[in-house]
Image 1 (cartoon, helix red, strand yellow):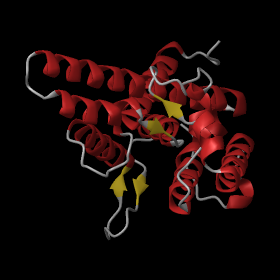
Image 2: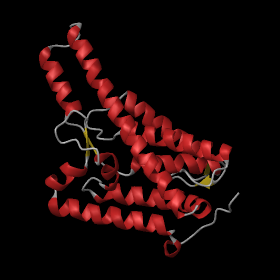
Image 3: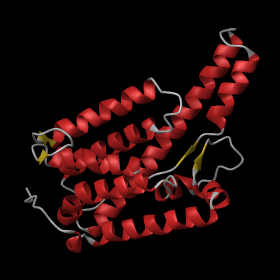
Length: 231
């Protein structure tokens, strides 16, 4: 098992370094071009005219315009992803990252489709009125998803699987917590948030859940087969 050591930003592995640069460039483009740029690349409901197949990948390079979103995502990517790229190599890590991101997008689209079907069923049995159907359906239909969080949750899941007992300090807790408990706790919070969404939450919880599940499946498969690549 690889040794997990403290490292500085000067030693960022090449793929993670380039992912950070690309995400920052996309974020600057979002600030500059705003809605037209975001609308093309953000992940839309599959039935929305703005949906494009490329959005399964492009959405993960966009973030909200507030800087906290991208800063936090890139920090977590660096923290959990660096050891993985070190032990897997750049090519393998990049493929893993992209698969997790696409998997997260597919799970999110599936949840949106299920949500719309449930609304149709409620309309058919009279549980909701036509006005309520239109209001709730509009929210589902016009949902857009941006952010690298789905792919990063896959990275976190892989890290927790390979290095489960690595101590992590979580502010403001004064004592370290093992990585496996941090990642499991975060996963459960996302699962709860997806099942019981709060109005104005604006977090694609099921994309996070999907990315974590895909990442865990991938790393377990890799560990069992001891394959060197995904292709």
